[in-house]
Amino acid sequence: MLSLGTLRSFIAVAETGGIRPAARRLGLSPAAVTDHVSQIERELGTTLLLRRPQGLHLLPSGATLLPFARTMLETSARAREAVTSNGIAFAASSNTGIYMLLPLLAAFERETGLRVDLWVGSNPEIRARLLSGLSVCAVMEWWTPETGFEARPWRKEPLVLITAPDHPWVRREQINLEDLAAETVLGGEPGSGTGRILRAGLGEIVERLSLRTGFNSTEAVKQGVRAGLGVSLVLASAVREEIAAGMLAAPRLEDLSLSKTLWIVMLADTPAEAPAALLAGRLKTAG
Amino acid sequence: MLSLGTLRSFIAVAETGGIRPAARRLGLSPAAVTDHVSQIERELGTTLLLRRPQGLHLLPSGATLLPFARTMLETSARAREAVTSNGIAFAASSNTGIYMLLPLLAAFERETGLRVDLWVGSNPEIRARLLSGLSVCAVMEWWTPETGFEARPWRKEPLVLITAPDHPWVRREQINLEDLAAETVLGGEPGSGTGRILRAGLGEIVERLSLRTGFNSTEAVKQGVRAGLGVSLVLASAVREEIAAGMLAAPRLEDLSLSKTLWIVMLADTPAEAPAALLAGRLKTAG
DNA sequence: ACACGTTACGGCAACCGTAAGGATT
DNA sequence: AATCCTTACGGTTGCCGTAACGTGT
Image (cartoon, protein in one colour):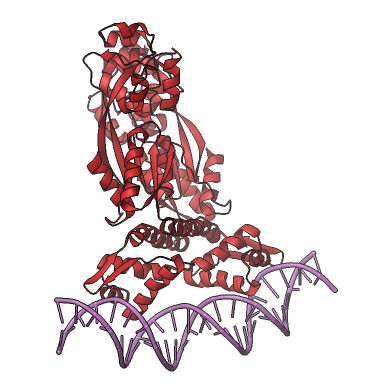
């Protein structure tokens, strides 16, 4: 069986280009490092290094092994981190869940005594974190299926149309889709969460909307709408306070109840006893 | 430092629910398994199992560790597989590269003596294989950025319009976009490679095309077009022989030279000496 | 001479099976 | 009494540093 210690030596040799500097880096004797490498070679039945009096060189088999070795050491470090820090490596998309999520996380921490290490970012960033193991559980606005991961719907959140408080629409009873097509809509680019909702919920009229893209967070969208750059459709819970305070207006949109399904994503083989699973279950019931 | 042997014992205990069955599965003595678990516990400074006379139970920390432990053992097996089989775990999207790729792979094998373990599938399947380490290098029709991976353009392949040999268009000099909008186009659903090209290259007219989706491979599209279900846009190299043989027709599409960029994707930290890197370099120069 | 990697050797810790202990049903 | 996990103990193995060796600069 391969051992992490010998792999660490192999990585050091590959990175430093020699036995001696590798040994110095690891605080071992050169003999030990030599032994580690040849141990792996015996285990795998292949030679990893080309030994020449001029120096060492990675053979193809060694180069093949190197990324795997790095992955294993990294996973080991992550495992230690995940177990020792009593926290749950949790992530949430900034465009969705945090408004309703933070109170739930706080309550969960109080009740269980567990800590939630929250990382907030964009949906693709969170996806990358999940895939690389930096986070083990996340609330996301969309998820494309991936082997080894499990996504379940969390809650279906309504979207509202928001405008600046002094927008002409504010004095009208309701807005229809034709009105919307004549205005500028912030956000909603393809590939974003809102973009997906718009395409699914509005149908062909989406193509006639004049979208103003580049607003990659709900905060930016809010500021843009307040500044009169256009209108937008955002999660109702994300603008509740601004609407109450009169900083934003939410005219009624006719014939349309758009909503966004938020997802809880986690590793598929997470045992039910894992803190991450507990948190997911708690969110589910609270949702 | 954690050791793979002790982790293996821990996994067996977690999965079988007891020390004794775990020991039986591993061919060890119960004492050894007990020792392995408490070794991990000492190493991480946490207890992983709740010992009750009624039996063992995973604690939260143990449940947290379990997926990591599984990942490490799996990676170890993959590493052994990758190094011992002298092959390169390569993948190619069936909708793109295989027509032009297979001769190159054959030449590479002849020249280098290395073996290429080719896996052909859809773009999402290949993506999953790369992310999970089952393949270390791939030719794909699209790639969304992912940390730890590197994508470089391989070649820009032209697309051609194909129809059945007895299609009315065959007798015309050229076809324009309005004609296309009046026909049925096979494939091109959003999220597929062809779909992306169509949206990027045709612009708004895409929304007026009547797409017939569900044709998830170039082979299926070819058969559908031959059967007269509609027309399609495919890689020129994928239908060269059929067109030469008169099984398909390729009327000229006016004012439009669509092309699809194929990508070579591989692990970002692959050393230049790795067989996969050699293959990628060979493809690059041959492309 | 100097630097490098390998090999030989010896002390020491770690590994693992056997056997005994404590607790529960 | 039977089953289970744990602890104690001893033989064996493996690990690692020191030292010596061969080779190239």
